[in-house]
Image (cartoon, rainbow, N blue to C red; front, side):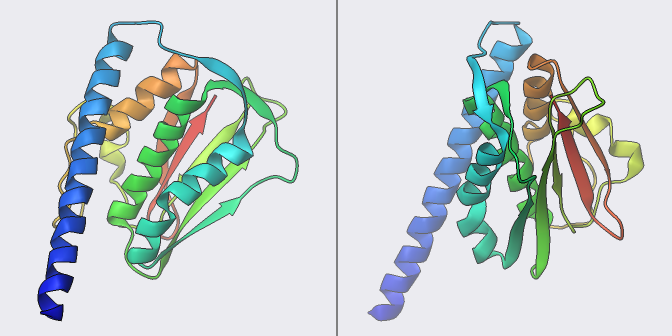
Length: 194
């Protein structure tokens, strides 16, 4: 009977995870539609960016532990407040971390970095770096398009191709940019500048 209970718990957990995934997918679709329509949906306020990154780390910690991936933060001692829509920006960060977790092999690390450039038109630069299979340079621009899924070396990961399009639209709605580059020796670094 114990085996049955454990199996039932496993399937209940998987059903819950898939329900959460479907909910995020539908929410992203709705938000993408609003962003594309140019609807004024931003609710900006001064937000402590270090704290926002720490919240995203916390939001993804259980999944990271289950996958044996470390999430580490590299934050400046002094945080700054930046005018952003906290809910949208939190979802942007969670999407980037979730993507990194999908492709990060066990016993690797995802690094969340924040810095505040002094000589830049942007107030904050946030990076999510992983040690996964990486993304070919040919796909660096296209992966931010809706329904675009890069051909990755990682088998078994199903993708719809909305998460990074959502991230791009959120960054652009904040008059910012998002980009990706290779992480040496392997993996990817996603950079958001607002």
